[in-house]
Length: 273
Image (cartoon, rainbow, N blue to C red; front, side, top):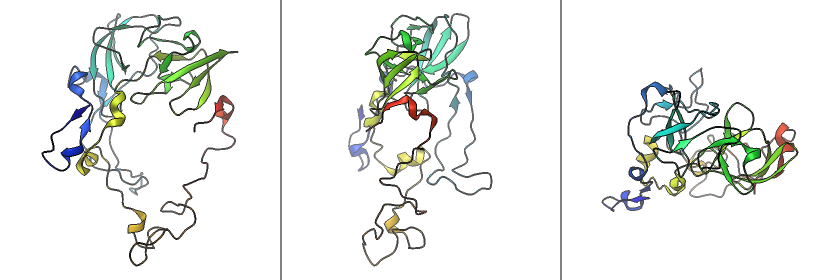
């Protein structure tokens, strides 16, 4: 982590990951970027449907290959790069057939490493293989739920631990503590997503959130009665409603939001804590 000298009040507690020790280039590969138009939380009628969004620095989207479906073709890691649209780092892989693709970088991945996607790939960090061939106890990330690419464990520092293989299913323990089953023919990458120190980041000042496209959030108790269930009163008042609610009166604390008949309930062995 990189700490700053307290030259200003906001710098006093500001900490960010030390990118200079990991990243190798500052500019992305031009053929694999595109501009995504931002809407500041507004729908097609121009109404704000998601609050606290807007502004922020301009950024380009990197087209990530989450599936890595080029089987049995080795690839060499050319660069480790920053991605403004995700918390983990990405890597530019040059395949032996000459094609370049962006992939999610693992924690131990370095420039010059060789990786491969194969049903029985060697047990090496960054390689991608079927989860049924991953020994119990190993960590995996970017895990498929179907054959459309990785869906689980993609954020910075994330991983899932292989617990067991049984009858066409593999049991995984996720970072949240949830234990669930996935088809053992699905692919996953060995290791842990890069940038595990991301959770220790302290932005330090309001401008850091504005640069990320996050606008200020006003407390409900600071509003008027017509604007929020917590609003109004002379001075500081108690909540005045028995259960915590959103601006629109929807109960937030203590109510389960997962659908009771969701199809994937049967695949969850143990719910998260």
